[in-house]
Image (tube, rainbow, N blue to C red; front, side, top):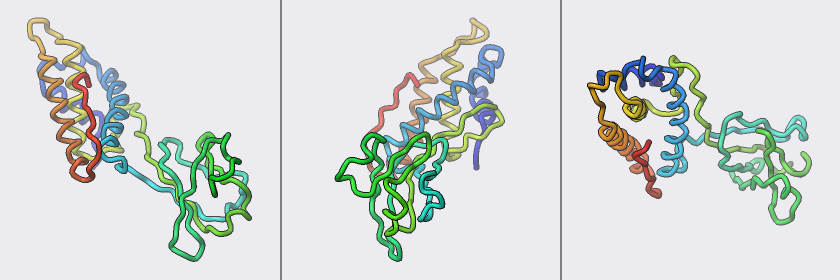
Length: 216
């Protein structure tokens, strides 16, 4: 079940009586949480490079070869492969820089320009394949409204986002100077919530350890 920015903010404000919207408006938290979701995605990928992976299949031959293959507007490339026609066999299609597209030794290659993937050569050069699969990681959808869902992450990430919102409000200080807020406490709380969340990916796939900075 997807959670919204409003859910995150409500949970975070409940953590301290001085987390007041006059001191830290929702708009401030919205901007910071939008930035934070990219940091959290990077941290997850340090634990499990294959998390959040998605694919896009395109049948060959292309209707108009020169038009290429339109890719998702927000993504991080992971690679491509072609399926040999009439078989289950697949071969890697190297995605090379545009300037390297005609260099020998790369085999059947592709290059990407402005979210369009172009196959090198012509349709006749790809008659041996009947499908191209593009692998990618979708980037988080921009958070522009507190009613919007934080769609890329599972529901268990809500506590991490709430911890981040609390840390932001603690850093901005209390509305009432006579009622201080411990920034150290909320920074440590965020670190613990993040550690617990990221640990679920560590259990799924052993990978190099990500360093979660307390400044987050």
